[in-house]
Length: 336
Image (cartoon, rainbow, N blue to C red; front, side):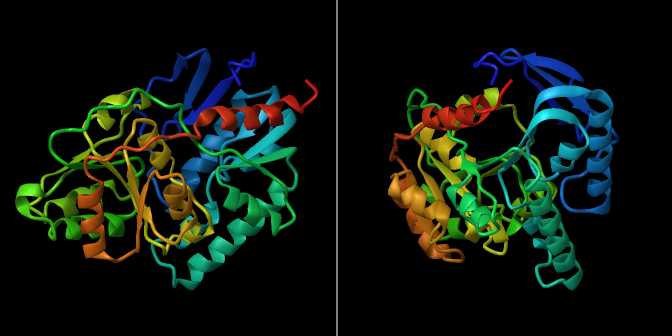
């Protein structure tokens, strides 16, 4: 939007209160709100922190031409801030997270149902809905809500030389311990002399748990790093040969159409990804030759796929250019 001539201000939630309060990047002003250190996840503390964040934003924003609600957590702002037009950017099925830690919990199912109902009601009040997946758009259409899908693709980057030793990376929110256990167990099926290293970088509700888990695999070379800045992505991609992007299917959003942006980020640098087979992300991955899918729970199959993909490269033919155009078409449709 900045490139199209709009003045853009991002209001961000500084959960850990460790970032500068106001910065500017590529002509975009970033205002970070501090309302107390807030954990990731679906705890009561998280919910209260998000509520305080929204209240802080309302107190700072008076009137805008376009309000862009980045996810369901910020969607309530659509009725609290005076905006000529409002966009809801649905990049995940937010309500499915409430059930992730205990899918059989009756209480969590009830909370998830209420979150879903509230989100759908609010989504019908905005001027435009954007999703990060064509499958999410299909899901919304079943609830009589039209939308435009804009995938989180990157521009193609200069292809990087592969590291001399096979290394698997995971860069992003660390929320799914079961996926990392699957990865670690699979590496035991690979001969020690050819066994890949692992680099996990990011933050999230399960970061500490995964770090502790990695210590139980003393025969593996596993690095668990803290969060990173997007500007570090090129140097991090240079360290790995494969991107790991598998998730437990107990996360309802996997079957419904979640597409990991890390798959596109890796492909932009020529790196292949491993994703869940027989899922929407698996369909896109294999249709565009961005990597391979593996059945969830297939430990040996994952090991074989890791060995097969090391040293290979991919090309992101469909990059961000067309996705950017779709987004701008939505914005340009507003009478400002």
